[in-house]
Image (cartoon, rainbow, N blue to C red; front, side, top):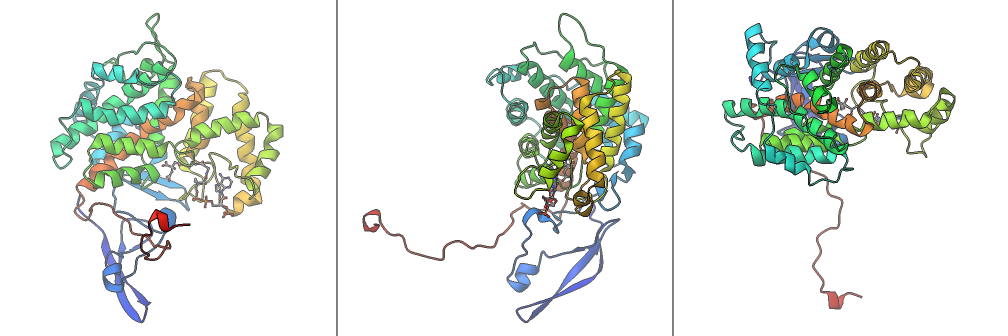
Length: 435
Ligand code: SDX
């Protein structure tokens, strides 16, 4: 990766009667940054920024979010245009290789992915070690980490060919793993991938087909599944992507790094929000109960939050939520799901919240997880599978970000510092001298 930041000036910092000049760097778009890498050497001080609200961890050329305007670009292309005109595999290529593929490039890439969708048969026995009622994300964390035990031949991330093999291999195998997790949880036999199917249709068939009868999904469901994957593919340096970058910065191989991303995504404040949001909509149950939950969301003494609302970066409508909402309406139309109570509650909840001064003042809008759960529910997935589906899409971004970090000459092992407020130096006292 060619580093492309340009110095636009300097920031002067005076602390303890010492003045340092720190470079101000600019990029293609978005806020400039103050390069503080020399701060400790020059002042003996660290910065402190819990949650990294004002801290950039890297230079990246993959995704850009304008949170104030509600804009999301992947290699410069807006998410709404990609969702409308592209497909998930093409987006995977764009994220990982930087440009939209030519016809021959896309043919070769999709063939390479398609030809690696099968899993080692002993992986199937791995699932058998889980309880049937294990949370699907528990199985996904385990299965993805275990891949390195079955595919040890492409783990040297410094080697470009091995990076491509592990990247394409993970994109190929994640749907097969996710489908097996679903089948295992409902006690049905695993269904093998079919090479003549598209990525989304292949995944849906592995999930919903049974030996007794094949599954031919409605084209609207295939389109909605592909769009779900597109909308969840990458999102700058979110918690799980930062986890993947930090894990990979130690030289950990791709399977371990991606498994760490799966683990981080599981949290209800992050990728687990789609599952939590649908459970919340079900708990609300009717539009009459919405005011009760809005009041709870605003009550500081109540830990309840409106799941699927709010975002660290978006202080405007999440553009993915808009596309996801449109996808839900298309799906309901095509599947003739009229007056879905869940959708009615979601639409009314959104309407009320967006007019409420609390949400307006705190700039809380629906995020990608607000409608994604409704779409996944309409496609036929149980709530516990929602974050697995999020991980399926986000694997594209995790790999692209990890590979970008691997070839970024400015990157080193991630090792944040701290401010210490624990006990000062003291000598050990033996047990028999303690009261
Ligand atoms: C994803 O980073 C990414 O890009 C993530 C993601 C991706 O694609 O990778 O976009 C995917 O994780 C989307 C977010 C999904 N999570 C949820 O929907 C869970 C509900 N949302 C929140 O918990 C919260 O909004 C976060 C976690 C998303 C953002 O948290 P921040 O930026 O740390 O904001 P905050 O918690 O400091 O909240 C700011 C204020 C607080 O009030 P005050 O203390 O200032 O008075 O807004 C309030 C919060 O109480 N607030 C909410 C709220 N979200 C924030 N109040 C009620 N309901 C909410 N959902």
